[in-house]
Image (tube, rainbow over all chains, first blue to last red; front, side, top):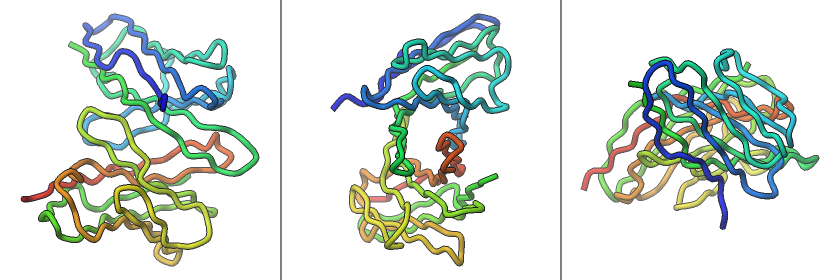
Length: 116
Length: 114
């Protein structure tokens, strides 16, 4: 069973550096989501794609954050000029989108970002 | 906007004892409700979901949850806890139409005493 895959699992970087994370969703899933989870909190929605189109962005997604899904398959999340407050677990999830009502999201193991 | 409250930040139970984790939600329409479990350093695993129909739903690993519309609650239960159930548990509500984005509660950390 090929689930949602995220790379890298851990990233340590210095403040001010740029970082990029990758997410590979379940192959037949056309929706892809990014969430951020800080220590001791529940995940918070950042953005989502349906195929290659980015359809929703949270106010949490500052202009230093950008996400892409160029071919409607894998997605990347880039953070420019990282700050201490960006330290968190970044979770990716995928689901089907259809007319059959709500489709559950399946999560990857996340990328833990630590800013020195 | 939807919201989820998990009143208990930490719960400790003895192995073999019963468990109930509380979840209260706020949502203006029929809610889509979920429980996820997260082990340290891992992603979220779906335990169970409620969309409609029978208000008592069964999930994986022996968990069940009951939807009570009058109380805006969706509490998670297990009759006999195993040491491997120690983890963080998250309740979430999904908004149909808003990209199906999930809103999570703050989580309940479960510790199991031998």
